[in-house]
Amino acid sequence: MPVVANSWPAPYAEKPIDATVQIPASKSLTNRYLVLAALADGPSRLRAPLHSRDTFLMVEALRSLGARITEAEGDGRFGPDLLVEPIDPARPLGDAGVDCGLAGTVMRFVPPLAALCTGDVEFDGDPAARRRPMSPTIDALRQLGVAVEDGGSGSLPFRITGTGSVAGGHLAIDASASSQFVSALLLVGPRFRDGLHLEHVGERVPSLDHIAMTVQLLRDLGVSVDDSRRNHWVVSPGPIRAFDTRIEQDLSNAGPFLAAALATRGRIRVPNWPASTTQVGDAWRDILPRLGATVTLAGGTLTVIGGEKITGADLADTSELAPTAAALCALADGESRLSGIAHLRGHETDRLAALVTEINRLGGDAEETADGLRIRPRPLHGGLFHSYEDHRMATAGAIIGLAVRGVEVEDIGTTAKTMPEFPQLWQEMYAAAPAPSATEG
Ligand SMILES: O=C(O)C1=C[C@@H](OP(=O)(O)O)[C@@H](O)[C@H](O)C1
Ligand SMILES: C=C(OP(=O)(O)O)C(=O)O
Image 1: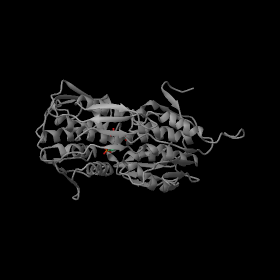
Image 2: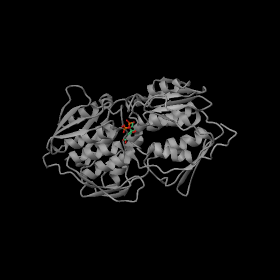
Image 3: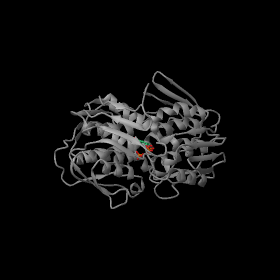
Image 4: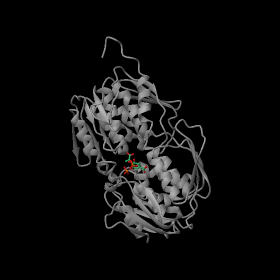
C-alpha cells in the first residue's frame, strides 16, 4: 500500500532488467516543429509526434493564434500525426488566451509569435510557471516595439498586443537563465521584416545544444542563419518551408530507461536511435560509460549494459539530463560533481534544491555547489521521493527505486508533461526482467 495518497510504489528490481524499450517522440522537436509549421509557407505534417501536456498546450496556443491543427492517422505507437495549417498574421484575433501550463517551450516560444499576430493575447500558466524567468522575453519584445503589459512583474501573467508585423533588426538580450530565450526569437526571426540579429549579453548561455537544434531546424527549412560568432545569431528574413517530417523519439526521456541498466546491472536496448541528431540526449552515449556502463550503437539500436557498480563522475553541462544523471550518481560508489547547471534553479522547480532534498531524504549525501551538485556515496533507504510537479524529478525517483527497496514517488502523473506513458512503459520494462527466484529477495 502507498504510504501517502497520490504516491506510486516504485518497482524494485530483484534481478537485472533486460528489456527493449520504445520511447515517445521528442518534446523539443515536436514543439519547435509546431511553431515552425504555424509560420510556414503552407500546410505541414508532423509524423509520430509527441502527445503530452507540453505539446497539447502548444497545439492549443497555436490554435488560439489562428493555426488550424488536426489529427491524422499515422503509424506512431503513441498517437496520431498532426496536420498544421499556418496562421494568417493579418487576420484579427478575438480575445486570445494562452495557457502555458509549466511548459518552458510554450511560455518562451509563443510570445514572439503572438507579437506577429493582430490583437491582444493573454498569457498565464500554472502557479509554478509564474516563478520561471520570463523577463528576457518581455524585454526583447519591448525592444522590438511590441506592447507587453506585465504589471511590472517581469513574469507570467502578461498581455501582448500584436500589430501584425515586427520590423526586427538588432536585439540584445541576457539569455543566461535559459537557452529558450534565444531559440524563441530565432524561430520567429525569419518572419520579422528585416530578419533578426540577436546578441546575447551576460553570463554564458546554458543548454547550447538546444540552440543548435533550433538553428539546424531553421536551416533544414530553408532559412539562412549565421551563428559563426559566439553569442550572435543572424537570421535572414524569408519564408519557412512547409514540411512533412517524422519526429525522433525523445533521447532525454530515454535516459531513465537507459539508467535502469546501470541501476540494476542489466541491459536495455533502444531501437531507432538516430544516426545523427540535434538532441542533447545523444550525450547519454558519452555520459553512461563514464558512470560505468558499456554502451554500443549498432544497427540503429543503442544497447546499454550496466557494470558491476556505478562509478562516480564529473559531468559538465548536462542540462535537462541532470536529474537523471544525479539519480545515478546517488547510487554510485564514488563522488560525483555536476557542473554548469546553475540555471536548473529556474526549471520546473529549483532542481538543484529539489535533488539535494530528495536524495538526502533517502539517506544520501548531496549538496549544492554554486553551479551544480556534489554527490557522495552513502547507502540509501526507502521513503517518499517528492516530485515538485517536475517530470524529471519523478523519473529520478523511479530510477533510485529500482535499486533501493521501499521508494515511493509522489505524483508520478506529473510525467505527463513530456511522457504520459511513463508509468506503463516503466512497468513494461520492469515486467521484462527475469522473475526473482524463490530463494532471493
Ligand atoms: O529549447 C528547448 O526545447 C529546451 C531547452 C532547455 O532549456 P534551458 O535552456 O532553460 O535549460 C531544456 O532544458 C528544456 O528542457 C528544453
Ligand atoms: C526544463 C525542462 O522543460 P521546459 O521545456 O519546461 O523548460 C525539461 O523538460 O527538463
